[in-house]
Image (tube, rainbow, N blue to C red; front, side, top):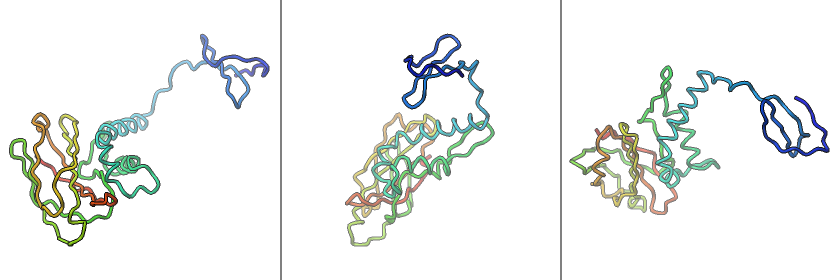
Length: 206
């Protein structure tokens, strides 16, 4: 690396095997251009694959996450979901990465949510049934949000349904082309004031 006269002004850039640097906080200098890009280590390659897998899965649910992730610890909801997914919902096997679909979390909150007792697909219609413990409070009117991921096609969808917690059932028509593959569903309840959400409930549809 060679320093240049500080009174000279040169634009930053490269020419042949030289790189010219002229920053605001450092005197201008010239350095040699690297011969070639350093090869990434196996750990770096695997980490890059994990990040790509995470973004492919989570990004389609970003709007849902921003709506139903209520405990952010001063972080953006999507960043919280990404952190959870990276540390709990991925498993590395040799040079491949697999998603632990049952460990995915798209919501955060302390709203009590019922267990899903029954789920079935009849053609393009998804039926869900659950048992709600009535509290005679506003939480009985919590809305049901549904996220579905097609493992085969890597397509995802989410929607705020018309079902309420007190209804104890939902029938929803799914897009016909969406059904060809292995489907993973995530059920979330959101309070009427939209300030609290339930933990994510997972079910495998087929």
